[in-house]
Length: 307
Image 1: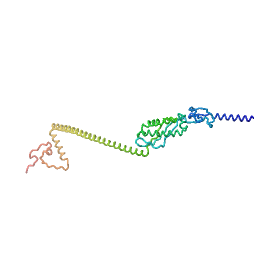
Image 2: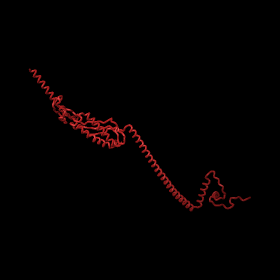
Image 3: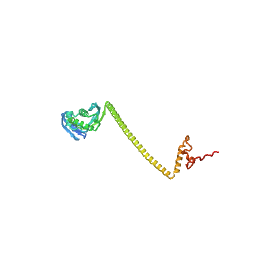
């Protein structure tokens, strides 16, 4: 009798423990909990802690669905090329970050399935990205407009995300590369532009060189002309000074001056070894050969009397 009672007490305690265990659930700081009763949402727990529910969920009583309460990331990579305005294509990789902010709506729309919600969000994300890129020029995604493009994509995705109980926090474009075909076309275009620019620079350089040479030539002519003018002036002044000195010397001693000039004339006339002169011995040129004073000898002087 006592053994049966102990057995019953043990069974009762076990049932109570199992019921208590089945009635308790824990929500940590990275989770939210949706309490369901017969498939209907009864409560949503968004704060971390220890909570209670009706036990025996296998019988259709309260069940708990745990969902994320942290920032999540959705990557958009390896997608078909994105067309921009003008018909060219980019290979674009991007991602967005989001949170489940309305657990009740999240349960009602996608049954709390994060994978299903991510698939729907990815479709809308891709469409928004293509729309924003399609309104931009080829160079926009590589310029300062990129930040504005990311904000526009985020704003386009947010309404659909809210319909899923999600909140899109941010959008980031990771990579924007040219496709192989467009990359080669861009390279060829940039090469042609650089060659044209190089030719323009060379042409400007040649023109500048011509102007510099023309200025230099003109300066050379002006400098040489000025030098020649100054040299002629100096030469004239020197000649005047020389003539003045000669005139002064002649005035002081005419005989010596005449002798000096005759000696200079002899030197210039006889300077070459092959000089040939045909002159009369009585020429004025040789008067200092006959007399150091240059006096003309009397007629018959120097002749011997006939015997």
